[in-house]
Length: 503
Image (cartoon, rainbow, N blue to C red; front, top):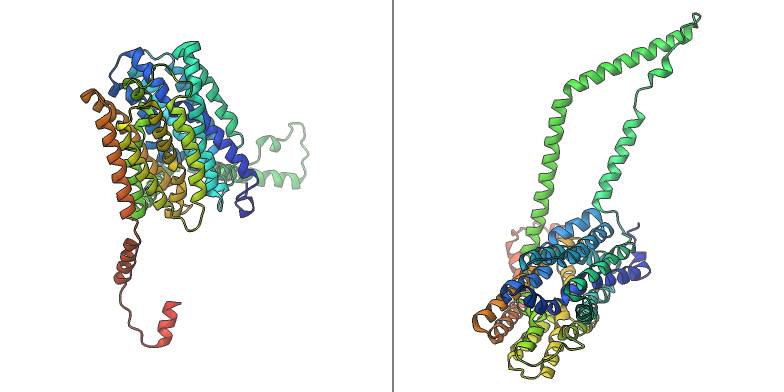
């Protein structure tokens, strides 16, 4: 484990990229193609579309809402143990969903359990990738985040075939078994720096070894045989001295036992104070991150984008069926088309953001504008080919998720990346969790998806406007002028004082 810059942008970092890519593919393959499972759950449980949509919204939203907790787990335990534990959660949740008797149980097993596992994988893979890359960070993050799109493309077609061959329950059992390979991906995630948990263990181990050096000698070494009446004066003096030292140590131990309860109470109070200081410091750093205008506008933008752009992933298959544009199950579902387009978008946008003269925030705002216009056009489409084209376009611009870590690093720096990214994903997950149920309720109310897609497109366009306006250069100039005006006026007595103050 070394934090030197020699290991950055190459070497083992590409093994980290491959392992993170496969981890996101295995974890997000089924949740990202949940639109294939959604019609099956509607037929199996006969619930409303708004209620059933909670399964797909929670599986993508819960993990992002819990991103601050997931990021803290990665900071304390490291990417490797977190990925291993997430493999157990994702696999167990998928297998448990095969025995779901109703939608409420499915909301827990598929929505919450699998969603939390996916959130842990997402935080671990992005954090360790950012640690291994600096100049090529945009490209590396683009490759890693394409794992979700490639997984959605593969799983959408695979789940269709598995449902035909083994039924819905057999499909969930098989993909749950495949998800156990997340543990193998974790083996490649070698950390550059020791996580906080291991540093605490190391400090405790060193403290125990120091205490063992000052243990008192055993009494067996001081026993004298009963038959030996002739003892030299030197030996008798040595035994007396050692007995005296042992008596003094025993008396010290007894006094320490008397004081033990009082000292234990003081130790507990010190631990509580340290924990309170750590929590207050953590909350203060989060407050400072939220005070940044660029960061706050990015959080609002990603919330509105998630609220509007995620529902088509879940409902696009049902849209085609309800409008009579698709009579049979397509060999390449619309979810797969959107996934492969998202994969291309993540790679291309990840390469574009590495160019020096391209502003990452403005590039993200442009993708939001284009995605919102695409959502407005979906209700006017009356052919399956047109729906395929719009799905491809929307999927391409939804690849802007690969820019989130890059933009967050540019705003707050690498030291605060995990905290800031956790806050950002909380807003994104909240939008993803609310979007599909709202769209489902719109359909239950109007028996049409038209009003729902107008609502989604309006949310995305509003987020693009807010993100663009709050990051214009004029705002930064005003903030710089205000900070300069807040400084107290200093009267210089000589030119030397002025030069010294400037230096």
